[in-house]
Image (cartoon, rainbow, N blue to C red; front, side, top):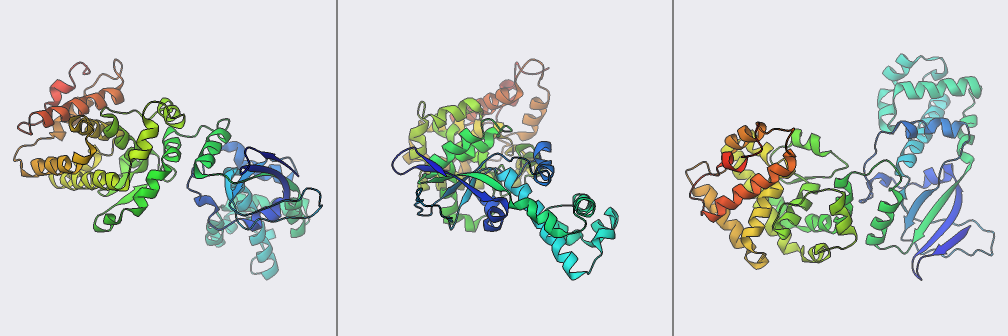
Length: 416
């Protein structure tokens, strides 16, 4: 074992343990670490079963712990940590856990002798063990292949498979990291892996916003379901959105657009600026208070209710688009002149004007007509739509809601 000090309080220990001990020590909620993305498909990781069965090397897994540990390097002793989270290696850990649980299920079945699994075919295993396989996250084909391997290579002796997990595995264990340190490490560790989505990187950088959302009590009065990027990608969210569903990456971009008073684009350049505290983004992370977010989200929920009442499904789908939300909130922020103390009054005025007007002020049907007629060969539809929505809502605010938004003018120059 060796160690490296990044500072007096931040220490990384390089340790080894058997894969079996690691998997049996995993907390039940190991996949729920806030900064982790969800489990993703990856053909190379899906071949991890062969890596284990052939005894090949698995790259080090990085853990973080809050436990108060003090390894004594001069003593040749075993140490344990009481709790930990997976900082890097979740995808490998998940597949190792599925494999280990499959072997334990196999052991139980062989011991109970309820099913003669060594002589069952793939169809029989799938049909008769479907519920058990579902619980551990595998399928009949993968389980059948493992049974065949046990039968042909291990002579049906389950100990042969269990021994495969007694090999040593390297672990980096970080102690003393702050939440921001953990996020920085996560972004660096994932830099050479399968590309982490921009939306997930934004979520990492604004986890403080997620904590604020969890504290806002007024949500109990409303339909409010927060969707994380690891639960649903933006395309799926756009298709499946219902009233009361809100996408966390969209909440981040609409908040930044309101504060910047211009539409913000969620891309790697934005992530870099936030990560390295360029321009005003560091200040924004401090400005985003409980009261500010409560005001912003109360308005969003009230607008969602209005859109559903007036436009039905078209209204629900309209604000499922990041391009629409950022345009709306950028325009409101621009009209507000960054006077945060006046935000509540402006939001109340907007909702009052929309609800009291007898005109179709937002004119969503016309919006969809002209947006769908854009020439995708000549313009970036996303950027053009943000600009059109920004200008359209600015027009509405400046004319004091006296006339509907003229989407024909706003989309001029982008049509076929």
